[in-house]
Length: 117
Image (tube, rainbow, N blue to C red; front, side, top):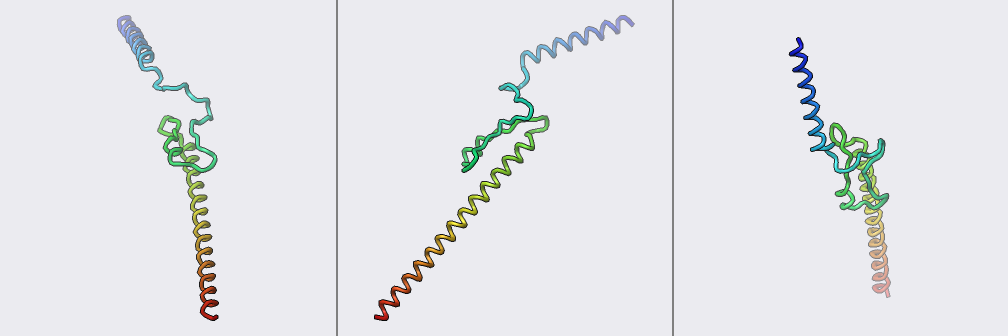
């Protein structure tokens, strides 16, 4: 009985030494200090997001991958920015079309005056 107890104590001591050695050698596996709870390294400008901004997005790693709330936030922001840009493009195209129609009517009216006189 005492022999089994001695083996158990020796195994626990060996396991503790191996664990401490691995912790010292490998550390926690993080390059930076851990973030405060609830904070996020995810950053995007307030307006006019560029491809470089999107490429620079970093997500906080959690147990099963990236933090879903951060990914959802970035996707929501990008979606809103894309919608805004598309609406602006549609408005500008509409303005260009109206201007072209106005110029075409103006030219047609000017030709009618020249031909009529």
